[in-house]
Amino acid sequence: MTWRPVGLTRDVPAGRVMRAWVDGQDAVVWRSTRGVLSAWDNRCPHRGMALSHGFVRGEDLACLYHGWHYGAEGGVCSLIPSHPDLTPPDTIKTRAFQSAESDGVIWVRLEGSPDLAPPAIAPGLDPLRSFEIRAREGDIAHGAAAKPFEPAILSLLFNPIAHDRTLVTVLIDAQATSDQRKLASRWCEDVRREVEA
Amino acid sequence: MSLAYARNDWYVIADRNSLEQGPRRTRLLGDEIHVSGSYAHPVIKDASGRMLPTQIKFDHVWTTVGDRPRPLFDIPEGNEPGRRLVPCGMVRVKCSPLRAVENFLDIAHFPFVHTDVLGAEPYTEVEPYKVEIREQNDEVWATKVKFFQPLAAKSAAGGITTDYEYRVPAPTTAVLYKTCPPKPEAQDVITIFVQPRSETECDVWPWMALYDDDTPYADLVQFQQMIFLQDRSILENQRPIKLPLDPRMEIPTRSDLTSVAYRRWLKKRGAFYGALAETL
Amino acid sequence: MEVREIRLEGRLGSDSLPVWVRHRAGLLNLSGWLDRADAEHARIVVAGPGPMIEAMEVSCSLGPADVMVEQISSSPLWLDDIPQGFSIR
Image 1: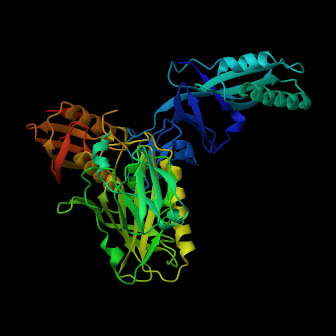
Image 2: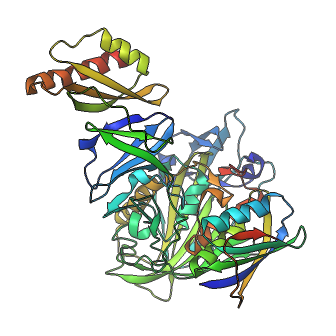
Image 3: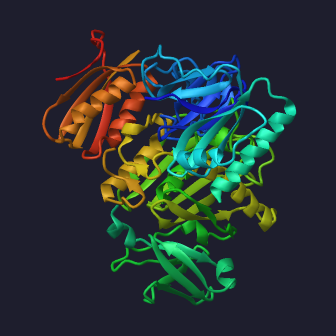
């Protein structure tokens, strides 16, 4: 399976929970209080509630529905509040995916060799922003190419979410000035508007 | 999906308030339904113009599209003197009608979904309770259910351990009997009538029969609506959308006993509309 | 750690039952075994923490899609030589 860029490191600080899509799989991406990043099937194994609506408690992600806790290391259930005295067996766990961060981008992969790192981004680029466009990857690439951005080097990463939705992660030359970054953000909006029209 | 079973049940499709706003279209079991007339004389037609039978019960208008409808159950508490009958309007939820009923039967979510109202941490433990299928009328009953609640009802002043009983008289109706704070020897009755618009969308019509003459009507309705809007955030985010009748994908524990008994009861009677009856 | 015997009665003839029961025991980390006497009767012996044994009972009362459990009952067993893992007998 391929590593997919699902968002920016700075968009998922400690305690934050986010929903992501990876090769058609609904996923939850979250960071524990101490900073451990995890990516799991977005489904509580208890009753099927989306874990992306859950809340972080220390090193655990808790499901909003019945408060079942799952630990950052491996997604093992650590607490079932309706049976507070029970130590749940480590066979009760979420389905965990591989997650990694490089150059400020969060990458998730459903399966694959654990020692294979996500693709390195060209050196000298900073993440600018990550946002959704209601269009296919090919149409976005086409729209972006038709509207070259002159002030600084940009690089676009794509993650297909659904047949007509794509998460776009934009990287910019690390040397770019704040004015150039503002212009690049505006360019992103222009491309989105044109491609979605 | 067993539409055949579902067609022969009665469903709420309007209340007095919705009829007073003039003719409306709604959906029942996937088909369009036309509702007009007055509350005393409602006129219900299916998409082909066929008149459907109606009855007024529990402050709502009921209809059925089946050829051999099962009789509509009774809720005798609705006739008890001294009770105040409170229809609470409607909440639309994009979920299986069966999931709406299942959630209504669940107490373990109170501290997390209805935080500081129907439950609060650290009072999360669910004590053992009793669940049975009552043979004489083939209903699911859960009894001896207890839960600590910081603000159990509009009429409650502070935290109390509330006693609950649940009754499922039909696949899309659930009745709850709970401690009535100002009248400890009696029980308040809170019901949901679920109108299955399709297998994945429903209108929930709450109805209450309370011993509470003091709380303004608007406050009672607002309280119930708040609870249901909180539940909706759960119901629209469960996977799979239809209610699985095989627990393979889930991990029920003792506190889910009512949910499991409800699913078993649906499975046994073949009430599969809104359910995932096959193995995934 | 408790040991309990769970007895099932109903339409249990489907081939899916043993696989399903073993999967559930694995998920709840329970050791023990399943004996299926005939198409209507089965007996499950499980060892593990009380709440997980109760969870096993709750799941078994619903069972796989093509099985209809009509009756379920359980009682404690005083056995201490339950081998690790779950087997079909």
